[in-house]
Amino acid sequence: MFNLFRNTKTRETIERLYGAIVAQSRRTDFYTDFAVPDTMDGRLEMLMLHTVLVCRRLKGGSEIERALSQDIFDAFAADMDRTMREIGVGDLTVPKKMKKIGAAFYGRAAAYDSALAAEGEDALAQAVTRNIFTLGEAAPPPGARALAAYARAAAAELAATPFEVLARGELPLTAPAAPGPLARENR
Image (cartoon, one colour):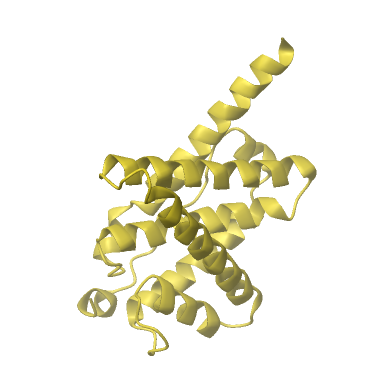
C-alpha cells in the first residue's frame, strides 16, 4: 500500500518537472529575442533541448537520479505521442514518427553532451545552428550563439541544483538574457 502512495508522488513529481521543462521551452523570449523559429519544429527543438539538459543533469547521478531521468524522457515520449494523435496523425503512422523523434532526441542529446563538454562556445553554437536553426554547417547566426550561451549557463545552473530540488518537481532555470538586436534581426 505504501508503494501506491510513493508511485503517485513520483508521478506528480515527474508531471511537475516535465511541465516546468515545457514551460521553460515555450518562453516567448526564445522565439522573439533569440529568433528561434516559432513553428512546430522550432518548439519541438526547444523542448528537446531543455529535456536533454535536465536528463543530462540527472543521468550522471545516483540510481534514483538516473531513474528520474528515464521518467522525464518517458514523459517527453508520451507527450509527443499524445500530441501527434491530437493533431490527427493516424494510429498506424504514430509509431514510425515516434521512432524518428526518439532517434532525433538521442542524436541531439549526443551532440549537446559533446558540445557542452568541449571548451569554448563554437561546438555548442554549431550544434544549436544545425538542430534548432536548421542551417546545417553554416556559420552560427547571433541568435544561435546567444542560445548556446544560454544552454551552457542552464547546464551549469542545473549542475549546481541539488537533486532534492528537482525531486520536488522544481526547475530553477532563470530567464534567458536577451541577446541583443542582432539576434532578432537574423531570423
